[in-house]
Image 1 (cartoon, helix red, strand yellow):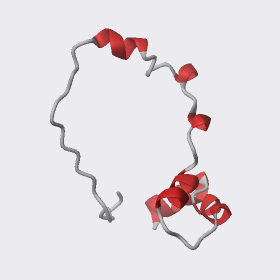
Image 2 (cartoon, one colour):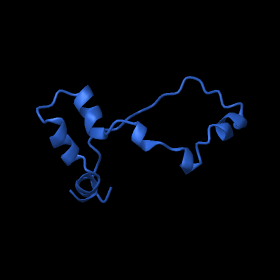
Image 3 (cartoon, helix red, strand yellow):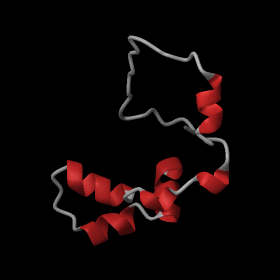
Image 4 (tube, one colour):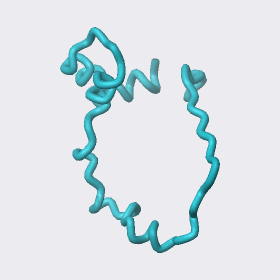
Length: 77
């Protein structure tokens, strides 16, 4: 992004796909924002704290990953 190379890449290999029922996608209501519940997911900071050893407290990580400051650091630095 903006001349910066990513530090990490994720490669996904797919062995088998079952994409035979378009109705299943429609029934999932995936494209209807009124069905989304983003607050049902843990914050990025909580996920990091659970899966990584880190000295930072959850509160410090929450501050670091706060939407405005994290997006600024991600794309500007």
